Image 1 (cartoon, rainbow over the protein chains, first blue to last red):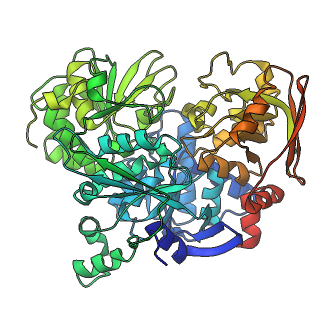
Image 2 (spheres, protein in one colour):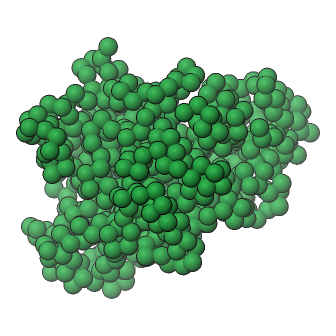
Length: 431
Length: 174
Ligand code: SF4
């Protein structure tokens, strides 16, 4: 029978079906961060089950608040650190080597096509960009994942999104996904996998595909996925070259996960990007999306460029292309947070960090920080932030604050203007 | 198994997200107990105050569509749990929130929109909901009347509730 990529992954990973429709899958990688894991660890200890199913399949990072900002966050870090040492979890990324989870784990080559991935973090869907089934879960699922290497899911239906046309100047993956969420709404993909297809996705870098898949959850999706292709092979080659004779062999192997012709989709959404404008959210839900021309001129207090959505090197390059040789508005606080140490270093080497600093941005260490209003740029009540992150929920970046989600390009020119601006009206340096 | 039922807290809005149920700034807590006073602190809902004592004496939440969307934080079910709210009734749930509820041995009950609307007819009155877990039945009782509704739970979800949660279930079986 013709199957979707998600169905193939499910089929190859089913450990048990305790009840009809409830599938318990073997998990290939369990990812952990310091916000949702410590309670799982404490609970395992309290139950006398302080064990891990396979230390080599557990990867952990301290990323949400780092370095620790107070005694409580310090304690969360300590619980993680002690646990990783106790169980010999070697892939543990602590201060100085740490970055935003959904940026650093792929960068280390931990995610492969056909994998099942869970993490106590809703944006785990990001990793589907590699052709994996990657789902955010709660602490109890994480706890069982750590202990037993399994997780339960209902068999997923797939929504196929065909992104066709030619991306106009100033329009990026972020605009595409905001537009998709506008169409699907915040609950349109609940219990579904969103499959991103079409010539625009085929041409996208892994970074852009991660931006797409990252926000699948904002439409309620369990995972975003892209078909693993030449771009995937190139990205993963440093990690998989030992396993394949050549790239063609890797590609052939990856392609076995592709959704079959004639497989069943719950829904197909076609989006032509050729006339798309940059997209910006208004209000407090990520499906409240408008064309930039409708909201241009809205004053903001802070511009934030970073996060697991748009804190990767290509995002920093795009922003820097608009910022080069310019200064941000004196009324604006600009904050940029490269998502991993490697991204930071590459940005440094390419002169991008310098451009941000010359423009008047504050450059922070890699961390989630302001994205969830925990540190490094929390808003005051009544303040507005133009942000490249993924959630505009009430209070998300600070109690009483408001967030407009947008691409790094819109964020950069918004910083220059002090109000929401349209990147298509700005000249851009080539980076 | 937990105990289910009691005074109703009506939250008349769709798409209530987990940041509203428990703001991210409390995620630095490492005990569930510490979350207790912060339930629904950032909820955007006209006329609602999270400081209202009636909120904390409730045992059942009745709400609309897509409840618990957003973050995966199990702190959202936990903040209900430590406040003795073990049941949420909605026309639909976000997947992770729904799973988290059953994983904790709590009830996330989906009813058709029309029935949710009927439950909301009791809003403002002193309403209680009784749950008969074995019969898959809930009964709303208020000065506006009494009415019973049948609900359906997946067999797996029922098993999780009976087992007291997913850790117990998985530990026995895998
Ligand atoms: S950057 Fe923001 S959305 Fe991404 S993992 Fe961190 S807190 Fe979550």
